[in-house]
Amino acid sequence: MSKSHEIADRLSRSENVIAFTGAGISTESGIPDFRSPGGIWANSQPVLFQDFLASADSRHEYWRQKSVSHSDFKNSKANAGHQVLARWEDAGRLQAVITQNIDGLHQDAGSNKVLELHGTAREIMCFGCDARYGAGEMTEKFLADDQVPTCPACGGLLKHATVSFGQQLPDDVLEEAIQLTSNADHYFAMGSSLVVEPAASLPRLAKQNGANLVIINRDETPQDDLADWVIHASIGDTLKAIDKYLAAK
Image (cartoon, rainbow, N blue to C red; front, top):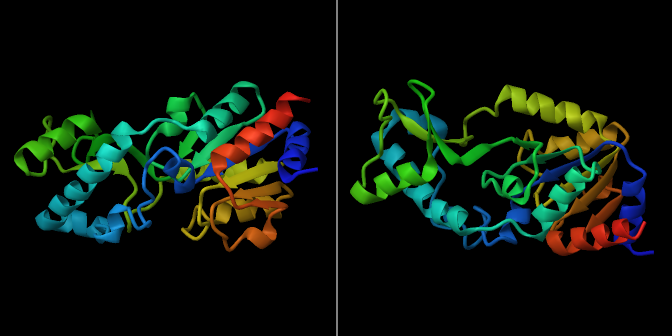
């Protein structure tokens, strides 16, 4: 019996299934991993949150970087991996997706219960009045005049609704992710290096609470030894194979 067949068999007998996803599921949609050779951090240093708040030059660099990544997000489509997870949720097999990604592709595929640990790049938020704007609108404004946009409502600082380096994860989202993880009996960790905390602790927490742990990732992770199944292959192809066995049951 193949690993995909074994996972499908166990999945069919599980009641609380959670998927945890990282950049690797979105690279299959053509979005570069920020840390990869083609990613933005190959040639740029990420702007720290405290620098964004303190420096106009840092805010300009932040918006420059975000305008580059925005084109990748805008042109991307949900792939087979996203679609399988959405089908599983619709069929009642999957309770939620917890993601480190900010691209919104899980929602595009049809997933409804998505916890975005690092926020969303699809919205711009104002620090002054909490107003929200579409990222496309404000990115186009920045590119048109090469000036950091300010809030049309109050003139406040504008930043993508994402968690920057040095910025805390939203407490409510993290707490819900911990609760869902703690109650899981089957846990998929996919496309994550499993080194960025606190998110990297979630698969370990699932295993400690008795869940079957599946790691699907292109490269090895520090948690491979904890997993019940480890697959170093395409996430989309692997999930399609598991889904095929599920459909046959």
